[in-house]
Length: 117
Image (cartoon, rainbow, N blue to C red; front, side, top):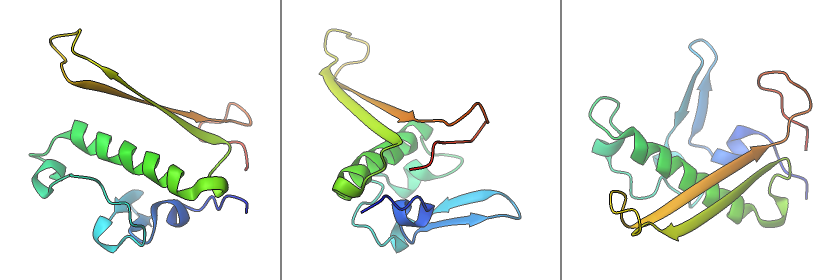
């Protein structure tokens, strides 16, 4: 089955867009996907007191899990590679290092243009 490129198909019913303000909203409470924004708490996602790194990480985990969930019908012109390695050799970092690389195929040099599926 070909990949449905619509944002609501990928992000679920919790996705919305306001054309008046160009604001994208994710509401995990109303998402029709079983994937949520991980362990992200309300205080961590708060726009003034939260942690932008935790929010970015939660979004990456969501994308990783959603692509895996799509199986054979996942996008082919947007790919995701992940890696984990022990960061204990770098004492200042500690723990595990998780990397994400998202590759987008572009049909030309246009700013937001991507190759059709």
